[in-house]
Image (cartoon, rainbow, N blue to C red; front, side, top):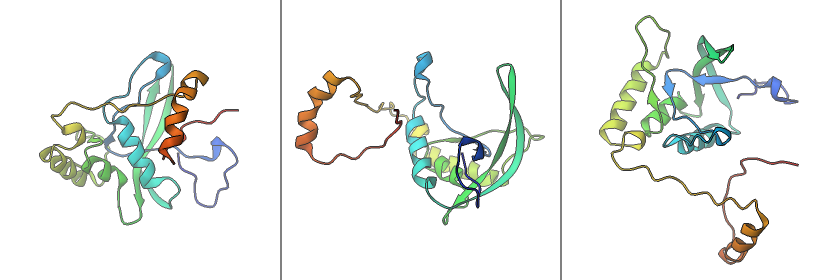
Length: 173
């Protein structure tokens, strides 16, 4: 979700949802339905977050598609996002092996940087990076300390260990 330039953030309705053109990222899971993340989904999301969150970006919309969502449908915009000296963050994700290039039919709209995305993917495949790796994916471990008993059990080691880096995923009242 992107906040357009010059618009002040009041609520979620001000944000614009843009998908990366011709980029297919691993799908995040859904705890409610017991579906686990695809391999490298977390790493892909974190890399995109590091590249873009809090930074000035340039968004170029290239095409729109109607995406079926159950009984409804959503008209989604696809484009490239440039940040700093990087002309397309999708290309960065593909080059690092965290996403793959979406294959299109000849009559379909696609990213104007499609050839660069294909080249980045072939380099990532040649170097066996990320999703192209033959090694077994090592799932990340998360210590969920929401229960008081578990938090108390970990408190000693957390205090002795000193400052710990982390990312706040969710806040509730």
